[in-house]
Image (tube, rainbow, N blue to C red; front, side, top):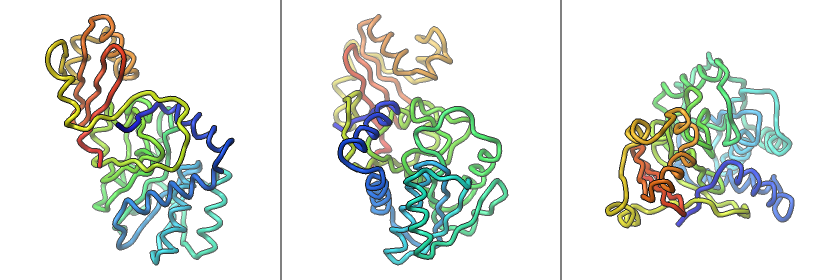
Length: 285
């Protein structure tokens, strides 16, 4: 079974790995290499980069693409960089990668593949209106859309879109799956999902991803199979709290009732008993 972890665990595990064994630059290069291997590249490629390490993954990907005979365009939404992002920005620029700034008025219709590196799993709060409009423009295109780590605008913690997210054909999770990839609005924005291992030392095992054929023992006697919508109406004392903290709310109900809950979010399921939390998703490759 693969691990599914919280954003906090991911952040702390990433920092621990960098401090003890692997540099941030090396992890960024591994992430970009994992994305490169996950996609059949062709045609005109745009990589939309934000200011943080998610944007840095995009710059590192641009360099790899150039080294393999492609010529992507980098579209920047900010003039800021993370330290490691700046390193790969300069490397891809030295190899002739074209760039321009993009905003809510950018025409994305000319591209065959759009790579979303705007915001990573550390994103929280509400999107700025200009980023909302930029994402809407990306979503309108017929391009094949790849989100790196998570779809920009989607919470890595609970899968809530704030208020919209990039609608990807493929989301390439980096390191480990995060809980928000299987909850709330994620089903509407993620068409296909895979994870690439980049050597991050996981500090704490938390939750696990089941294959579909491992789900059957949890369905039947003493279990409750219910849609997320029905759980909110029949079991949650506070529907908004259930949306914000589904693991906490379902776990409490499972402990109080002594029952296993299988909460259906569409293509993904949250499975909770008194001891463990599992996920299952038809979208995982």
